[in-house]
Image 1 (spheres, one colour):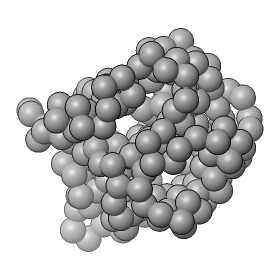
Image 2 (image 1 turned 180 degrees about the vertical axis):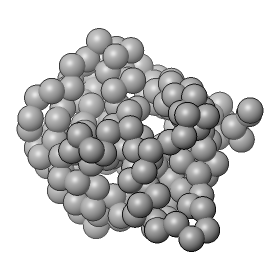
Image 3 (image 1 turned 60 degrees about the horizontal axis):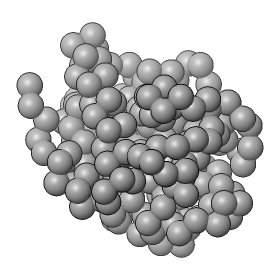
Length: 191
């Protein structure tokens, strides 16, 4: 069984923001695999079904970004999965170009507070993740305002494509392993 967690903030005002791209990918995976993500459990909205031919639980933590680890810890404790091989976390990344995807098997939080909190609650950083490029903060912008801001119309087209590709990458990670997904999707985004 796999736990697939998309990071974001729960309130309507955060919908379609840079910080909520993890929720967008969960929604794409859910739609593609006919899974309803609506059950309130473990401080999250969850949905159960099959992804990449395996049982999966889709998770959208409702704790706000900085406390995402609380929800992730509860889900892992309940389903008793192997955190290193059966947990996939999807988050935004300002160090990657808009639309770029980066898959890793482990690593630091890279300054991302949601990942930092998950690492704190797990006690390690050895879990699979898909980092979604949302672009670097422009000079003079406040970081919080930037990540809680919306994409431009031009960026939105690229983001919609990267969300679709991240859903495919998640399925490939499950079906054929993280290395196969890294080889296929860790390429520089074309334009």
